[in-house]
Amino acid sequence: MTESSGVLFERLLDVMARLRGRDGCPWDREQTRTSLKPCLIEEAYEVLEAIETGNPDWLEEELGDLLFQVVFHARLAEEAGEFAMPGILGRLIDKMVSRHPHVFGGASVATPSEALAQWEAIKRREAERTGHRRSAIDGVPRSLPSLLRAERVQAKAARVHFDWPDARSAWAKVEEEIREATAALASGEAARVHEELGDVLFSLVNVARLSAIDAEGALQDAIEKFRRRFAAMEADLIAQGKSVGAVPQNEMERSWEAAKALERGGAKP
Image: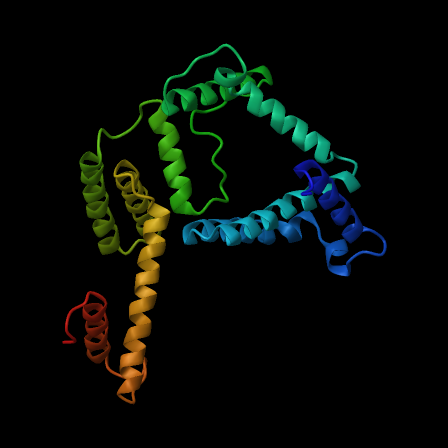
């Protein structure tokens, strides 16, 4: 008979306690919150990669690895006398129930956007009760990748109707920012170039968001496309007995264009 989730979760907590115990694993015993930060980020990205593959077996494994990071941090807090897993679970359950009054209470919402607006309103009321004024765009971690953080901040602003009407309108802002970046490059002022290029990137994210395009995913795909074409260019040069860096720029450009043509299904130039 398959063990219940509750029983298995208790076993996981016991495994974690054993790993951190006196006769546990030397590596696990020496970890701290700071040392585990890269692991947490890495495991989260591995979950995203598993989702992209559509492989449920891989996703199951990676979600387990991510859960283990949560359990690890809970154990560190328990050892420090700060809090423990029951506290984490209790707060999470209370939060989910209180922020879904349309499910667990008498409220009513008809659309996902109404549910999201209700969620944000409840969060603001919670902050006010604790004496904190919450901005409409608060709650986006600084540690997020920049494109994703930009999208999340813009989306929060859009919820209070501070937004472009459509992607074409947002593109006009991109063109304006490009003109300003061009002027900054001509000035040679590094600080000004830094600022204006940031504005270009931020405005491009607006266009992607309003076009229902994941800017982070689009850039990842562009990076992967560049990697494939660069590898093909290298292979083409190697086949000619040459190597990247040892041939003139114009010859690399020819191999690059050949790689692009082959990828698109065309004939090699």
